[in-house]
Image 1 (cartoon, helix red, strand yellow):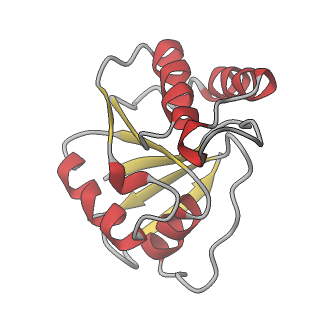
Image 2 (image 1 turned 60 degrees about the horizontal axis):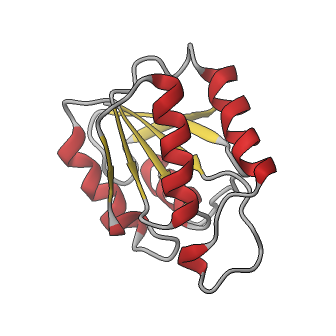
Length: 148
């Protein structure tokens, strides 16, 4: 199965809570530019799953609009400090799809690292960075990745 991981765009530093932090104008522009640049590489994505936080919801909306995806949902399994193995395990529900998961640091890096068997050496994701993973099954150590 192939799936994609993406970190949200640049978010405001201050808000009433971390959950309420919105994309900055620059962050929204970052998302638009990144998705437009990668549009051909992302053309097989058929659903988007994102953290329920405001900045990932906004990122998902921009991506869905550009990629013409209507199957968009949120999941608490993709919040910043969620269990990366639970998040990775949840991907099983999408084996018939090619999903894009939009989430946060550190979770995005930890899920990628667990999937490829490098759980002790996660590599940071920049804002709007995308990774494509191939795995026979979405489980620890079974995948390979490429940063786009």
